[in-house]
Image (cartoon, rainbow, N blue to C red):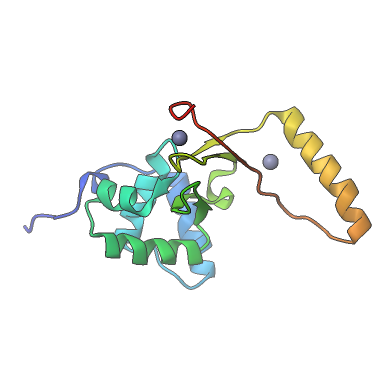
Length: 157
Ligand SMILES: [Zn+2]
Ligand SMILES: [Zn+2]
């Protein structure tokens, strides 16, 4: 039996519902959830904030180039979303197609960190209502929104 050289994430467990959803979403775009992609998706799914490419490579125990290449495929496959940090670095999280929850981002303009938060129902209702009212006058039919807040994080204040 050969030893697996993969990092800690290869033994971590991804929520089976997320994995099943990822396979469906990716197969619609003609992509498969290969071993590396699965490991990367597991690492992202278990993180409590969006991860940079370097953090993904570290967490998965794969070279940066492997992480980069597979992240691009996961983004193309519709299961990973890129968020641009305050330092212009790309951070990665699961798409809403997989998680069934809706988040907004906090972007620190000093250290570049990206965090996320679940908006209150009240905030969400007012954003949607106000956007619909405005966009109607432009004849635009909105299907989703991205709402990122920029500023200074707790440790940079
Ligand atoms: Zn910061
Ligand atoms: Zn929202």
